[in-house]
Length: 172
Image (cartoon, rainbow, N blue to C red):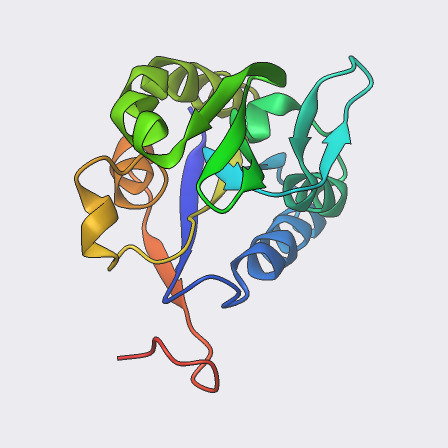
């Protein structure tokens, strides 16, 4: 089973994706088989894999930094916003449906088995998994149904690095 490390942030756009890519490259250069993982990502533009499946572009860049082919296992849940309060939900690269925010928060825990399966598959194939959180783990309104920050850190038994940008706020 792979070792894991996680990067979480004090806010969105704190530099998590770039730090994960850098760690993937560093571990690859040190001779490890490494893969990125983000259980849930939100992005308007997706990447289409060789198999015709959709995934977040940040995980594609991270996979490239790790020297591996991008896979939807690296981003099992992708939310593509359709307006301010709704998103198209992509699960394992395929359209699951459109949901408003309330519906998604009510149903996202049902997607946990897909997240665990994707993570476990990667963990069985690689030496190190570099996980990326979303937003901030300190967003109290999101903690109850968390599937991307501390939930994933606990699942992966991963120590957490906290990234912050003091110029943008959120560092406390």
